[in-house]
Image (cartoon, rainbow, N blue to C red):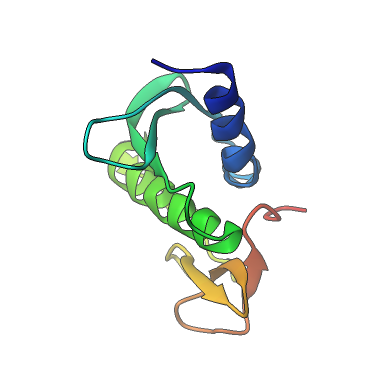
Length: 132
């Protein structure tokens, strides 16, 4: 059974990632928070462009940057596996160097959750600041 507090928590925790998805033209939302017996995490559905693509896990016990990086990683996996444009999977988030065709990767660096180019560590941006 979801509560208003759980719903608000899910919306707030997902806000930076939602921003980065919007920067790529993808409209995302989370909803229907719920718990499963034996799992301490809060679970919620991820919808992209109105389609339910999977479940996200929110680890309320983790520190903020760790929560954000874990959530961003879950989201990226779901987007790469389930969102398509013109018959091909979407590359998200696309590398800051537009000559690179790969997605950036999630890293924790000095207590910050970042998207980073896997080929050039100097290309990085805080999660929630793509396109800012």
